[in-house]
Structure formats: C-alpha cells, structure tokens
Amino acid sequence: MTNAPFILSYYKRIIFFLACIFLTVTVNAQKKKIPLKFLENILLELKKAGILESKKGKGGGYFFGKDPGQVTLATVMRLIDGPISLLPCVSLYFYEKCYNCDEKHCGLHEVLIQVRDANLKLLEKKTIADLSSKPKSQNVKPKTY
Image 1 (cartoon, rainbow, N blue to C red):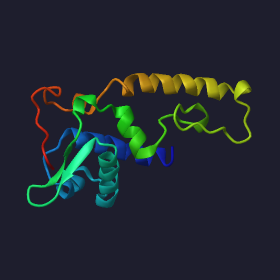
Image 2: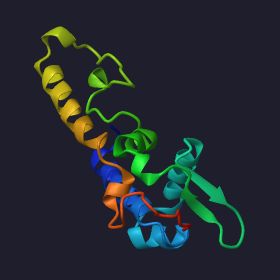
Image 3: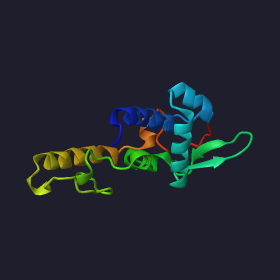
Image 4: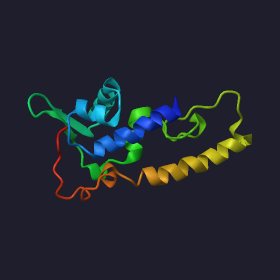
C-alpha cells in the first residue's frame, strides 16, 4: 500500500461517507474533511464498478446502484487502492514477486499471509450497510447526496 496511514485515514472517512448518504458531495467532503477532487475520483471509480449511479441536474447526485448490503468493505478497499495485503507477494488479486526475496525461505511472507487472511475474513463479511445505523438493506431506498 502506498502512504498507508494517509490513505487508510481516507478509507475510513469514505466508507463512512458511503454509509451516510444525505448531503451533497461538496458538503460531505467538507464535513468529513476529504479533499473534494480525491472524493470525486473515488466516486467515479465506484460508479464504473456499478456500486454507485449518478443523476445530473437539480436533485441530482450519487446514489447506490447496488444494494449497500451486498457491497463488501473488501470490494470498496480494492477499488480505492488495489491490494488489501501489506506486501504484493501475498496479494490474491495483485500478486507481484518481491524484489530480491525467496518466498519459500521468508518468515515474513508466511506471517503476512495469515494477516491477509484474517483481514479478508472480516472485510469480505462486512458491508456498507453494516456501517450504517439504518436497517440492513431492507426497505431502505437509495438517497442522493
């Protein structure tokens, strides 16, 4: 992960942002202290993936294209920054061999596989709807922001 603490701080804010869709993008960006351009890029990525849809004009904005109860945190994190794993040599979807390292004799490799699996066990179970105080995806209409 690049700039892990910096990016993770935004992950938390953006994921919470998605769970609380009430205000315009500009107001929410200011309220959650997320740079507007950064947020717009993330929203576009989520739109390309079909998680969000948008409507232009008065009353327009972004809204969920998929049921928030079906959108896992792992999916959102991968869309925002790629691999969830701490090193590319243990990534499931973005594998790259580490420079100058023999994975068969690397103790860190085995530990980080366990870390990856523990993280994924939770992140693939939890959804955007789980972060909201609203009822889980039943009778919840998408709201624009």
